[in-house]
Image 1 (cartoon, rainbow, N blue to C red):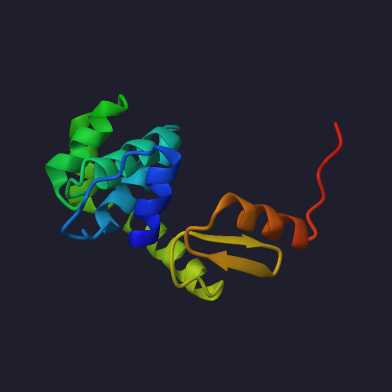
Image 2 (spheres, one colour):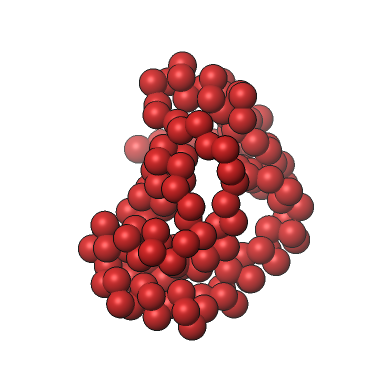
Length: 139
């Protein structure tokens, strides 16, 4: 967390001083629904801000419904998705795939058979991409 705070400060990004870590499982399930509705990127951005900038509990149904509403998704549908756990199996499948790939932390970036774990500075990510053998496409 200390490293993350330092990086956020260096980049001028807001980051709250959280005193608790909240389970994000229901947020992951609602994110799957948002993705199915074509609003996944907006949901992820809103959830990130809610958790890391505003330090809100993304485990609470009312917080998640507010997130859905903030990106133009219907609140009653969000409540139904959460209560019925409609996307439970999809998130379970994601977790299974993560375990198969050996992912133990977030963020993790995988290219080919190589991976890099944790928040990394730009130069580290740049070197990782270069060493992964991925070539830049020519226009």
